[in-house]
Length: 186
Image (cartoon, rainbow, N blue to C red):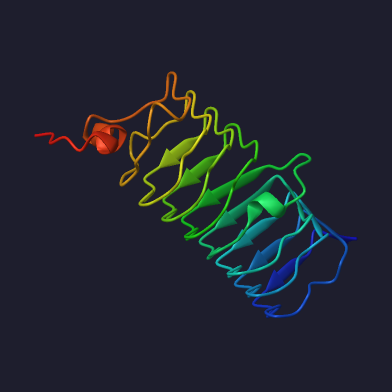
């Protein structure tokens, strides 16, 4: 078990990080692109300015994990171990990422690019999308009750196919709820 370790600018790309538990570790400027992180457990860890593009996360445990300034292109978080899954994202590139079928109540996405991501059948109750680009992001049969979209943009959410009770939207963002109707708003 790795405990309270700092990993600085380590290249794990295409390689597998040693299969063990990582607790209260910090990974700064590391490259995990195309690596296999399957079956590894991260608890109370922080990833800063690291690249996870196309990494495999099959049955990976992410318990109270924070990503800051990271590139996470094409990750399938729905492959992760769902037990105690808790994530935070700040200033991250999450294009083409899948969160399908996950319970992410209260998750915070701050200053993130979530273009072309998939939240189909995800529970995002009380989630916060703070200044996020949600262009072409899929919300289908998604629980968005009490979610906050007030500062985010480019989203298209259909009230008929998602649960949006008490979700928060800005006046400027209302168009994202009406896209399906092909109407003009001035």
